Length: 601
Image (tube, rainbow, N blue to C red; front, side):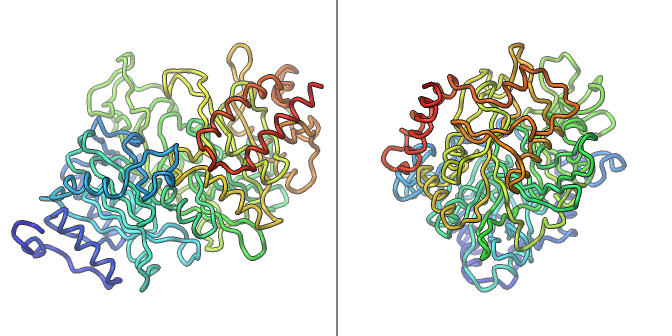
C-alpha cells in the first residue's frame, strides 16, 4: 500500500464496466507501483492525439514535417535501451525443464522476489495507462485479449497502432476473465535493473527497466509468441514467427503462404514483394509481416490470422529498391524510433534512397556528418505504422476466419549449403527442416562472418517453452489433417567464389513463389534428391535472368559434402534437448544420413 493509504486513488479515473478480475488486478498493481493517476485507454483517435500532444510537450516525441510526413513523429530512446534484452528475458515456469535449454529460466518465486522491489513505487509521479488490446481480427474465434499496464505514453501510443486497442478489446472479453496480464514500468531504465519475465502458467508478463519495443510492447513478442506459443500448445494451434502473404495469379486466384525467416533474411520484404515487370499479371498481397496464429478448420485446412494491426520493423536498409510498399506505408501516421533527423525535419537512415545528407541530427540527438565514423540511425532503429496504410494490404487482413495456408516456407542465410528452394517429402520431414533451419552471421550483426546459428522455425528467442516439446507439438498438429500445407525451404543468399549473390533476390523471388504454388497445385516438375524435391530447370521460370551456368548449377543442386558436414551440427543441436526430443526427428536425421550415403554408393 502507498504510505498514505488510499490517498493516491483520489486521482484515479473510474474504470469502464469490466470483469471484476480486471479491476482487482489493476488495483493490485496500482498499490504496488503507486502511480499518481490511472488512465483507462479507450483506443479512440482523440485519445491518441492527446497522448501525442502530451509527449510533444515533454519532449518524448518530436514532430516531423507535417507536409512531408503528416501525423508522424520521432522518438529517441535511452542509449542503453535500443534492442531486445534477450539475456535478461526469462521464462518463469514451475519446472525448469518446461522452459528448456534454449531459454533463460527463473522460478516464478524467484522472479517475483527479484522484481517486486523494482516495481514498488516505480510509477510515483507518473500515469498508469491501462491498455486493453485485442490480438487478432474483431469477431474472430482465433483472437485473444490482453491488458498491458504501463507508465509509458509512448508504449500506449504504439499499442494504438500495433493492436486493436481499447473498448473493442473489452467488448471481446465480455464477462470472461481469460486475458493475458502484462505489467510494464520504465523504472529508472538501468540495465542493471532490467528484466522481462514471462509466467506462462499464469498468463502473466512482467517487464521493467526498458522502454524499447520488444521489451515494452508486451502484445508483440511477449504475448503473441512466448505466451502465445504456450497457449497454442494447450489449445491445439500454432503461434509462429511468420509472415503471411497472398500470391495472386494472372487469373485472379489467390493462394496464401506463411514463411519463417531469422533476422536479416528479408522477411518483411517478401511479405510486401512487388512483382518485377517480367512477372506480368502476378500480385502479392500482405496479410502479415511478422506473426501468424494458425488453426486447422473444420474443412481440414490450416487457417492463419495476423494477430497484429500494425508493423514494427527495422528502418536501416528499407528503401524504394528493397521495399517500396513499406516506404509508401510509413509516409504518414508513423512513429519513428532512433532514426536520424534531416534539417528539413524528415527521417533518414542508412540504406535509404537518395543522397546521404550533408548533415543531420543522429539518433542520440547529436550533430552528424558523413565520415563521422558513427551511424546516423541506430542499426536497430524502428518505425511503428498502421498495416492498413500498406498499398498491398490484403482484402482479407481483418477476415475473422483467417486465410487458408497452402504452403509454409522456412529459410535462412546460407552461402553454400542450402539450394535456392526445395520441398519437404511430407509434413514430418518438413518439421525436421524447420527444426534444423539455420543462418550464417554477417559482420553487420555480430562482427563475425559465416558462423552457423540454429534458429528452429525462427522461434529460438521467442518460444515460450521447451523447444523439444514445441517440435512434438508441430508433429501432432500436422498429423490431424490430410490437408496440411506443403513445407518448403528457401535460400536467397547463396554466394559465388567472389562473395557475390548468385540469385538476384527481392522482386525476383516471385519466381520461386510461383514454383512453390505450382507444386502445391500439382503442376510443376521436381527432382527427388536426398534433401527433398528440387525444381527442374524447366519448372522454374528463369527467363530474362541470364544467370551463368555455374550459378544455376549451384542454385538448383544439393552439395552432398556440405550436407554431410551439416549432419554433425544438426546432431549436436538435437542433443541439447536430451530424451525430450521427439524420436521422429532422430529418425529423420537417420534417413537423411542414409539417403546421402546411398547417393555416394
